[in-house]
Image (cartoon, rainbow, N blue to C red; front, top):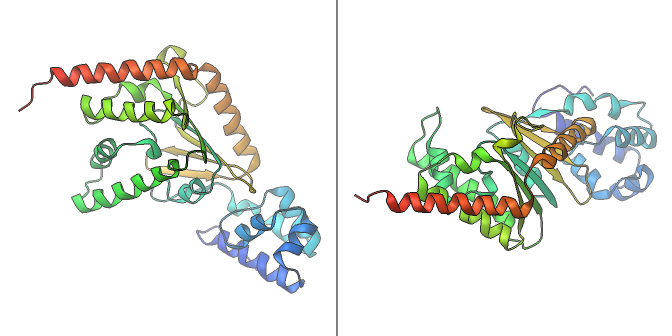
Length: 279
């Protein structure tokens, strides 16, 4: 069975694993024990939701006697481009037990207030109707519901100082947004670090990064640029992103100092909002 490099390749890969497992007379549990993988991970692969790493694929080939089939077709699954900015990554975001974000320009979606998100979705080069904007707004705010659980996922948010200084929506919207992040941090729901302008160039300066870890699956990395996004599952690339995050974190302010900077910026916006005359 040939697997083409197209949006269905992951589903085809999973369907082929299921076909060959059943042909070998094995249940998912039996295959998991022989291949030293969790049954849940195998179920996700067969469902087209995850890919095995190289060692997993080799063990699958060995157990199923497939002569390198699953290892040889891994490359078509690496670095899948994501349509509609983060659509693919949301599948993983909802399953993650730990998320580490780096935001170079905007507050990340799961931390956005309705007013801030509305301003972001109303801007940009592509005109949207009010109905289109509101539909996107509902989806974005629903993503933030993963923070309703008091413990899972663990979330670290690292902001470039530009996120604090760029007045998205004006001073009132920014003050509310920064106070929201502060409230999440002060109640220990998230951990916050700010990379100050004084840090100069750092390892993550070029774009948004989201690192995600899972209970029983390998970690992934999502990186984003202008109108593009990519989920990386290839272990070597994910590790490179993790190392870059750790290096940037070393240049960031401490959690306590970051909260002090956020608080100061929020106060500045609040003072500015009071000075703006109301119509």
